Amino acid sequence: MLVKPRYGVGMSALGGDAGLPIAAVAVLDDELRRGMYEFIRRARRPVARDEAATAVGISRKLAAFHLDKLVDAGLLTARFEPAGGIRKVGRTPKVYEPADVDIRINIPQRRHDLLADILLEAVLTEGEGETARQAALRAADERGRQLGAAERERARPGRLGVERALTCAENVLAEYGFEPARPAPGCLRLLNCPFHPLAGKAPDLVCGINHAFLAGFLTGLQAPSVEATLAPRAGECCVQLHRAAQKS
Image: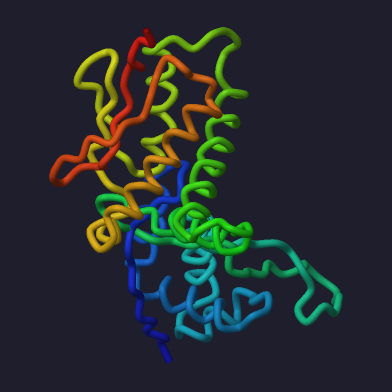
């Protein structure tokens, strides 16, 4: 009997190669692969090719082809292990288990997981006398600083001027779904709001968190020549990065 799983697929790449979720979903477009993948996920144990083949009613050879496609897409992991943990004479069979991945697809990208992480951190660390909003902004700033510091370690040594700092920011923020664009050498517009539509429900809070996150990122990046300011535009992120104003 062929298992026909139901999928609610949304696309939101969690950083890294944004094409990987699309490739994984494309592999699952095949009905046989979907059936074997769902069967293996429900099994909660390593599954051999013979068992996966029986689950969807195909030959072992054809099952091996489809299972290896799921491995190549990063949805399954494979290793050689005796069935039931009992070693027998002959070749050790190949077994499959679900990979520890979370595949979501949203176009344009959404990062509600990032917003949730920041809010959870705020709840867990809220200090005495600190309001919920203050805790959220602090947690967002700290998360941004961590991200910026990590990028600073990867950057070439030396001072970050405006254009170099914006290039670093552009590369990182593209992975987070902000869709950065450079309308001018000293300005970085963020054409997508990764926190939409939640930003529309509570713009003061969510835009404030976003601003604190991006300002913290610049602090961690050690880029005083660039600042993050609120500059809302319809259909875009509420923050832009640009050359810092000269202090008199």
